[in-house]
Amino acid sequence: MGSAEITGRQLAKLAAHLLAKRSAILERWQEAVRCDAELTSASSLPRTQFFDHIPDLLADFAERLRRMPGPDSSALRATEADDAAAHGLQRWQQGYDLREVTREWGHLQLCVMDELDAYAAGEADVALDAMAAARRALAQLCNGGISESTSRYFQLRQDEAAGNVRDLEQALRDARQFEQLRSELWREAAHDLRGNLGVVANATSGLTMDGLRPEVREKFFLLLRKNVASLHAMLDDVTSLARLEAGHEQRKVVPFDAAELLRELVETLRAEADARDLYLKALGPASLRVTGDGVKVRRIAQNLLLNALKYTQRGGVVVGWGDSRPGDAARWMLTVRDTGPGFHAGPGAPLAGAIEQATEEAERVEQNAPGRQPAAHASPPISAPAADARQVVQVRGEGIGLSIVKRLCELLDASVEMESESEKGTELRVLIPRSYEPATRDGDSARR
Image 1 (cartoon, helix red, strand yellow):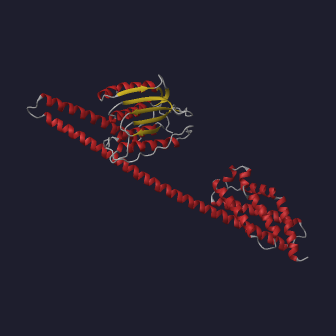
Image 2 (cartoon, helix red, strand yellow):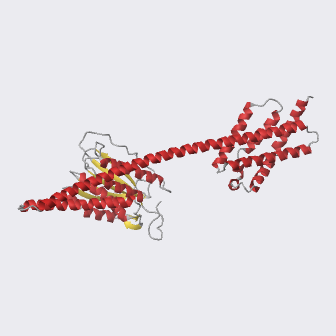
Image 3 (cartoon, helix red, strand yellow):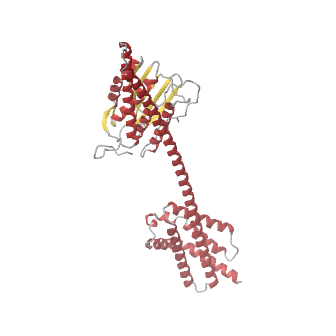
């Protein structure tokens, strides 16, 4: 029998021994890692997760010994590389850093080396060249494992860095777009304020004219009163939006009856509807007890209702409240439905764009809210209406009211939905949580 054949038989015997001792080797390896004060990530892992692909790698090592001293198998090398890469990936996902991974590999190599030494000491007829070949194969296995793990580490670091760059670039684009929209909103508000101030200045100048007839003077007084009231309302809106954007508004959670609150609001604005020869109806259960911020709910409803009355020429507006969709018991629904011209995206229709933005952003708030469970019947995606050549009904600067609605919905973890049909009207739905987390010491609910 030739020396190569003898070495082959001894290595095959050694491979069988290592497979039989694999569990003991793994246990000694785990103990060595636990005793290493510089390795902390392994202590929190269950036994199976700690061993991971290492049992397969030891089996690959035994298979390599069994085939020696013949030519190396490319298939076996590929299997070893795959197992090492998979182990490296698992370690990064478990929170290891590069130093911890390489130190673990070092402990594994020492444990297997100790087993080889013990085997050589117990086998009197084992050839020195067989043990040398086994140790060389072990070094190749561990070096390959460290190499694959390191390569996987740097690949994942590059992927993570590239992802962070993409996220940062998107955040910067979103920030620039937000600033542009915000600047446009404030510019339009300033435009409207200047317009009203111009009317007030003209009316005031007219009242100082000599020999003014009483009926003309009365018209100037009415014009002045109307525009001063409009200025007051616009300044209130600007102040409210500024407070919301500055984060000065807090959610104050108390029990209240949403039905009673909305009926009172409708009665308050009924004169506005009568003056425009429109009907104003309130539909919903007699009582709807919820826990939330009633003041902000009223502000949402008031902004939507005033907007609906402003642009509705015939028919009227219906304010409704009640349960949300089936399967969504955690929320209740506020609706404002009008018979106005509907929204469209023609040139100069800032109000349509504002509500579409309000819908999209508030839905993202709803989806990202911690602990939020999706409704059994999710609402269909809101798509922008097609552009058309109709005269734009909405006037510039009116988007500020709906921006307030959007901010208030974010504050209340509420979402906004819209359905609109040309010349038939628009329905706006606000889905609001029935309750929130327990109130903090000062009475404000913690923002989620």
